[in-house]
Image (tube, rainbow, N blue to C red):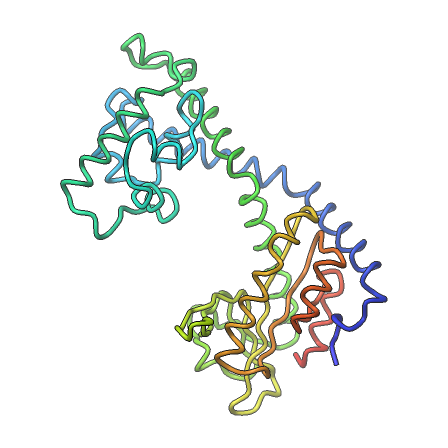
Length: 317
């Protein structure tokens, strides 16, 4: 018997309450979160400008030492260029650009000569496309005034955050959701052992955030599956499996239906490893319609709404 998956008569009211909760959070917190991220990004761009003598001495050595600045450099061109567009224009490997921006590192297997060659090509393309309206001192071969430097850093930071707006909001919402779960669990007598526990040594009455859970792909190959919260019930016996919780939020109905297969893939990989006795649930806040809920229910995935967080107790916690 389920907690929410088998009660479709409640779904409509819960969907409305969940949308209201998300919208209330967004209106109160999202602008502040965005401003904080923009302020942080502005400082990072200012530091990059100082290191490169305000782009007058942008070299491959700078990219080698600070790979993550590539995103800011892409936002410094006219027009700002997409990651794949830079790959095509500069004629460099997608692996290099992806590592620099997504992993904030250089590809570990790339040889030094190729690395220097490709980084130099990236620098050349960035400087060729640089937005002279933002960096007017480059054409005039001079150092910028303090006001010009701050203005340029602010514009680039705004472009960065604009391109990254959804992930900024998702990350803030996820942290808030995990915080709510932590408070509920600790008030219920559970102990947070994040960073000190694995799936094998989690004890009754303990929980951990972002724990890797082993699974099996369709071809039988092992895969590590990151799970947001793993909780071993206080009444668990030796050999019992913990409850796996995935925090999910959404600011519109379209994206949830695009992403609904993600959970089905995860639970099936985990079931191949542990069998159908494993319990994997969702912690939902935002725009999850009956189509999404029906899909998850058909996969045997239950859920807890954030506005009814006490339903966690119905899963034996």
